[in-house]
Length: 334
Image 1 (tube, rainbow, N blue to C red):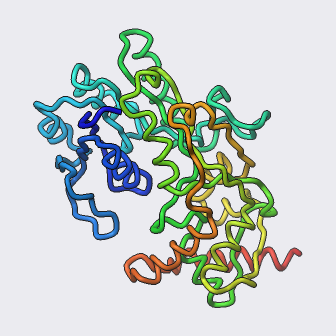
Image 2 (image 1 turned 135 degrees about the vertical axis):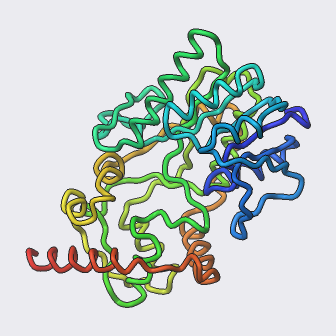
């Protein structure tokens, strides 16, 4: 890659994008970010990154922030609807050589009938509006590529985490439950397979797309190689928290969704189902991938980060009570 090609990250301080910013900068890109400019003590921007400030919900502010700028690449981590996408495309048309849209692997139709999942696996989600909106955004970009050659690349991450994001429903509340001798609630029987990826490992593969003409008009899924059961994920986190003998209580996803309704679309439209992925397409663009952060180590980093940051280590008492209700119900019918 040539030095000083420019890349703008819309977002840039999130769970995934923070690592991508650092990786792009390490490869010699001239990196900018567009966000509200609220300083983050958890995920600060590296030195040398240019900050463009705008509330991404404010059309006029975004237009003003982008005015006069041209970029080789724009990586959009913060668009969730077609209306937002259309605005961004209108502002960037003629000012960008590659627009990378971050979609989601939750867009794949579940249950999957053939493994591993590839980029050609059908897209459909009957349960989760978030996923349907991502599919609609993909459809819009594909149409623009075909009709006018708008230079887009679609990326579908799966479950990606860093030290500040616990990839288990209930997050820190579930860890505190384990430390208090209470059971961790796991959906189903906990044996479905799930692919989980550290953000730095995602960033290595993602960087292969940047300013790459081979990626135009294409879609890529980006995940690591680590496939675990949900039981394994929960126990790795509990072990990292000092509770290797934590008790797990298994409850059907449908039953959990009746009590914790906000979890329903995500569970039923995605995490209930086993998923494994073939990422050979993206890895061909940047060979040499190897998992650098296995989950057992990632789990230790997450627990250490939460123990060190009281503002993160928040227990949701309402959620905790709902989990107690689910456990009591499960034990009463066992």
